[in-house]
Image (cartoon, rainbow, N blue to C red; front, top):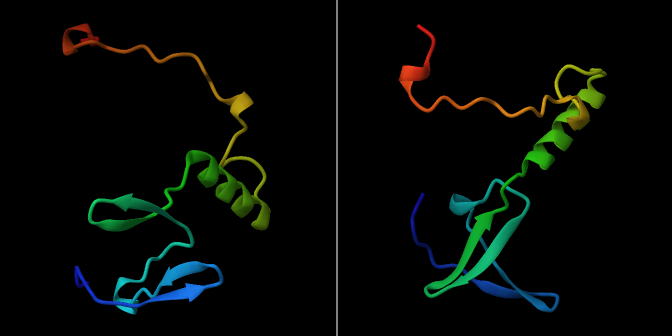
Length: 92
């Protein structure tokens, strides 16, 4: 993929839009736009854990899967995990 291409800006409703060439097509539906010293920066919106859980639950429902993939938060063990400071504390 080329690092830099010339493209066009056009009006879309009351906003400006940028034509993104096929060689730089983004494989996402949503991006964030950030003003940086060099211009504008587009970044794909990152999926949150909640988004992933929602997507997996929808998959479970569509496939008729009951339980097994995603448990409710109330079912998760919330006790803290013991942290081992160094190898000298490992059982021999």
